[in-house]
Length: 323
Image 1 (cartoon, one colour):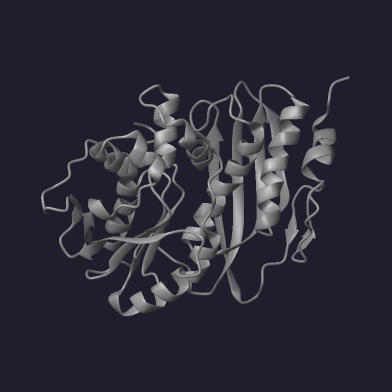
Image 2: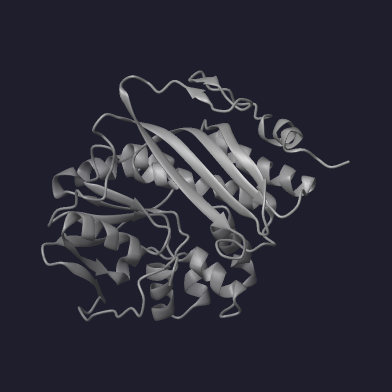
């Protein structure tokens, strides 16, 4: 007997145990009815993942459910927003209930950890799997982190380690290999990124500009430079590299992957010198590294520099969706 869209909704999407008090009406009607806090601004983001474009079709569905939400929560983190609600648009070439059960397990697992309630969406048939998620969060009025606040003299930082997801993609493409002891870690960095929500919240009032790293550090930092009308001296010797990346690639290849690999979902942000002490205090409690990698300059452009002062050349800046 064919499975109807409505039975799928009841069986897989409307069963989340989390029920937020600010959701007056969730899944089951034409629209959700939500109660944004009166003293907060609503922050909204949306991402689409397409099979064999943004993820391999054979990806474990539980990991895919996690990542579909994680990439949206990473955007909220970059704005310093507290996550609240999400909607899901799912296009499938066929109804595969075991796949769907695992997908929603991964999605709800991350959603419950961050207090995010799924409040609506749509399911439809299509030739390829496509996942579109929209996430909503709150930020005090005027406190959102933006891309246009960097000023000359600000220092540039990143969270975590860079390049591991890019390394996993290179392994999948047969371009390199990873020592056995690092394989699981590298694969998890690609398929189960951890959105830096706590870090984004802590950076409100400290960072002058911020962005999440989805398309490669060089490219995403470039968006801050463009919006802020500034440049950067980027000290490549300070880039935070994992033991897995160092063990798998030569030094220049590792640095290039860290700069351009994409899918890191770490935060890149700028901090004025007078707020460095505040940053060091809050970062001491983080569960990830916080690394200074450069400084904002008045001269436009991104200038990666080696330890000896010579230029580090890049053939490309990062992932281009239409390149």
